[in-house]
Amino acid sequence: MSFLLQQIFWAAVLPAAIAAGLLFFFWRAWGREGVPSDGGTPLALAVGYLFAHWRIIGLPRSFPPVDSSDWLFVTGVLLAIWGGVEHFLSQKPLVRHLGRLVLVAVVSWLVLRPLVGNVWQGVSALLWIASLAAGWWLWWSVQARFADEQPGFLSPLILSMVAGGGGFILLWSNSSSLSQMSGAVAAVAGVLVPLTLWRLKGVAGAGGLAFPAGMLGLIWVEAIAFVPVPIWRIVAMAVASLSPFLALAPPLRRRSVWVVAAWCVVVTAAVLVAVMVPTYRAYVASAGAYGY
Image 1 (cartoon, rainbow, N blue to C red):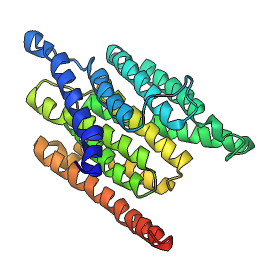
Image 2 (image 1 turned 180 degrees about the vertical axis):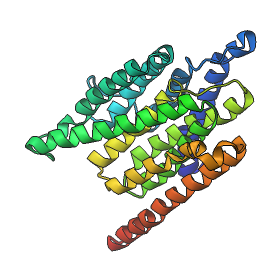
Image 3 (image 1 turned 30 degrees about the vertical axis):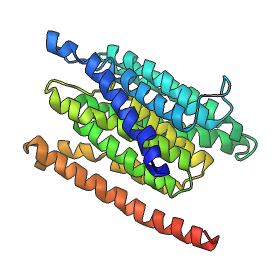
Image 4 (image 1 turned 60 degrees about the vertical axis):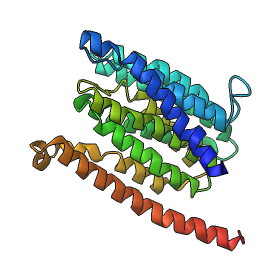
């Protein structure tokens, strides 16, 4: 098996299979009770992702972690727990927003504090951390709102596309490890698409999407801070992920879900391609300049 196929197998295929098996187990309650529940979804997705992290990067070497990649693993565990909390707080949106904010603020500080005094100085360090944390929280909250308003396959489909396309963007931005972890998020989020279609009452609400949205947000924060990936590329990927809001536009409100999904996929793909093309050209030009 070639190296590329091995990476795809360990970072995408097997994590997706693990997540799918756990989701099938957790969602069997629908058949008996007929009550949709996404309470076990973040745990299932987290186990699939954490398996990929273990195989590609390894387990954290210490606690608290000293490496930004190790913080991805720890945050994955926290998000598995928080997703379940969000599910049980579905009737308390303000509490969910505040809890999300606290989680994002604490994790952002712990992950980014090694840069304080080394890369970022003085007040600018606090502004960088606050800005990245605020962007992460705001984007995650927007994803959660749509997932609650339109629980179904569209949100995980678009998130999976953005994480997958973003994996190539991160790779061509010289971040192989974050690229692979973004691919793992794409794989486990993508599992929700066929399963929500299979179970017509299936939901992927804010609790269900807490893991992929929260995880992808931290990957982007680390990409900006540590690689660093140009901010416009991350912003463009975030914008691409907002295409599901087209479903709320008056011209599409009365159209079938398949028409809306098609529009969302086309718009998302167009934005991703618009980022991928110049990113790849810059990557090739940089490689040529160094003779490899």
